[in-house]
Each structure stands twice: as structure tokens, then as C-alpha cells.
Image (tube, rainbow, N blue to C red; front, side, top):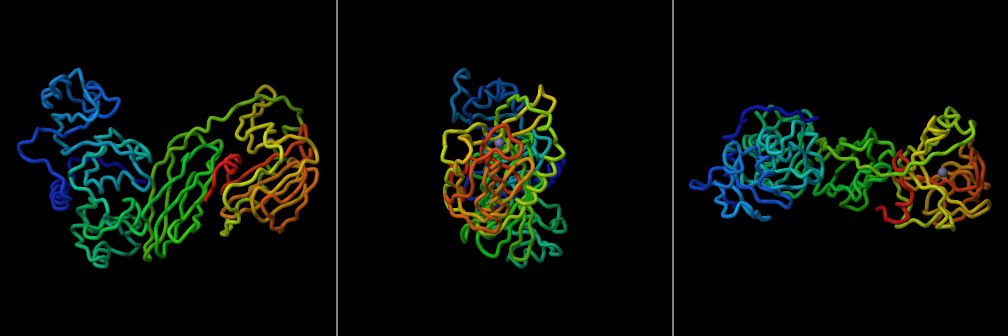
Length: 466
Ligand SMILES: [Zn+2]
């Protein structure tokens, strides 16, 4: 966790000197230019909103910017913001990409921590989550395309610099460290002299960190991609679960992690850890979990359906069965429907259920297919059966491991047609719909699990996961 220290202009002189040294040809603030940073008008801006944002009187901005017609402000107009002497250059907005943190942005744009915090009016680094529109000052020099190296445990910055042919004092300056002694094991530092594309928070063999749409959303499987090369090992954590990365190709690693259906929307931390060149690194970034906007329904059921103890014990067994992430991906491409009655969905995934006037609540962790007893159930994708047998609540149940932490479940069957250990092919007949276990009518309850969390099954029928 990064803590925000507010202190006056730390190392500003040194950083500025280095910024000029590193400047990649962009103009730095010259003498004779207007007094104050420049701001490029964005869609939705008004003069009063800009004045408010910078806590500067409107008339001062009008005067400093030499605005001919203050009543007509156009997107792209360049304003001078007077009275802000703690920052220079041109102020721009950027959506924070994955792989950049409050710390790496400071380093990349050679911005003192305090300036970045003041520009964005943040009091905690957690407010700068992935996708947040952050205001940055450019033209101080930018460390794009600089190689990054991780500080190994027991390795000093002097050794690290020597091993990479770097000047240790230049590395101290660009990385805004108080001294060579302040390099923390696991931290990722910019080099000064070597090129290497990729996000500032991750070491150089990594060229990109990405999360596929819809990002992190309640009840959905999120796909985290890391592009890189070399002898890289990867791990991580999200929402209390360990991420399991698997190589999809020579240059791409993938972790698929379900976000809990009942996770409260808000800001959480994504951590990516790994080892490269025998140095461990750890990168954390605030991310936002979005609301899945699921429906709510009220149900009235007999008291026997509310025996939560029995159901909890059985759920624990299922959770244990779907916990291992096996390293061979067995599915390919888009999944097939598990049931011939494509349109007969009795209940959607994610529904919040209030029973008997609200005395008990639950969530629907699967999709219910209707159609009646004896209808065929098909494997939607290749996999290995890890459980096939009766359960109290779920009735005749089958669980299939598809690899990489992805499982499917088929409950309330009248007949099970596979056994544990069987390898199933896409479209294979694996059982028949029934009304076994605790049900009020025959249906197939179908679940998909992604690394320990039951997720929206329909996604797998509509979208190709790696
Ligand atoms: Zn169901």
C-alpha cells in the first residue's frame, strides 16, 4: 500500500533538472511565456467549472489567457491558469491504464507526489483507480518507453544499477527516491538509459496489462491479460482470491477470475506479483468493481426450503470440488448450449431472492432451464467430470472441470449419464433434466464457476473466453 505523504516540493530541483535532461524534444516552459500552466479545454468544461477546479478567479483566467470572448469557450482552447506556481507545462487528462499506479505516474511524468495529488484533489492513492481520468502535467519530460527493473530482495540499488549499466544517482532522481538506500524490494524502477515499452508499474519483459470488457463486474468472469516474454512467472490477488495465470501463447498470460455476485460495488485492489531475472516484483492498483444490475424477486416457499445449515454444508463441498485450477485448458472457443430449449429460461443468473416476506434472502447462482423431465443435457465444452452423484439440495449433480479454474455444474437431474473421471466432449449427452433435490418443479439448474466464484453462465455462450 502506498501512503500519501504531503511535503513541500520534495526533490523538485533535482527532478526538474533531470526532466530537462531527459526531455524528448517537447518544449519546456520558456522565459517570456505566460505565468502559469496551460490547460486545454475539454468537452463539458465551462469557465466557471475550470475556475472552480483550479480555485482561481474566472476573471484572472480570462485576463491571463487573453480571451477575446469569454462567453464562447471551445473544446481545444488553451487557457493559462495564473497563480498556480507549483506546476508548469500543459495539463492534460488521461484515463489511468492498467499497470500504472499513483507512484508509477509520478515517475513516468516526473511529477512530485504533492503536485499529482493537488492537481487531482485526491487525499489517497486509492482514488486514482484504473480508468480514472487523471490530470497530468506534460512537458516536464516523460519516461515512456523506458525499461523498468524490479528491485530484488537483498539487492541494493547500486548493484541493480551496475547490473543494468545504469547510473544509480540518475535512477534515484527519476524514480523520486530520497537515496539509493530507499529502493524497496519488489518495487519496479524506471531505468534512465534503456528502452522498453510497457506499463510503468511492471518490470520490462511485461509490455501490457489488460482487462477485457466488462472489466470487473459483480457476478462476471474477468479476464486479466499480461503480455510479455522471457522466463516470467506470474501471480496475483483480487478480492481475496489468488489469481492463477496460465500461458495462452508464448507472449500472453491469462487469469480468469470471477467477481463475487454479492461483492459491494466500489474500489478494490488488484495485485500482480511475479518473478523475472530472479527478482520478485509486486504491483498493486486500485480497480473499480461495477454493479451488475441484477433483478430482485420475492418468493414464498415451504419451511423445508429454508434449512440453510444443510445447504451451507453442501455448498462447502461444491466449493471444495471447484477450487483447484488445473493447468490444461480443455475448452475451445464459444460454448454450446447445455440444453435444447434455448428459449426456456425459468430464472436468470444473479437474481436476488427474498423468501416469505423477506424473512430469508438468497441469490440465484445459476440459470434455470425448463422444459420438463427427461430432456437431454449436453456438455457445453470439453472437460473432465470431477463429481457425479446425488446431493441433498442439488439432487443428482454433475460437476465438470474445464481447466484453468473453470467448472460447470448440472443439478436436479433425473438421470446422470457420466461418472467422475470421464472426459466429455462438446455436445456430449451427460444426463437428463429432472426434479431431484429441493425443487418445486423439474428444471436444469446450470452453474459456471471461475476460480472459486459462480459467475454469469450466459457469457460463455455469447463470448469467446481465451
Ligand atoms: Zn436455479
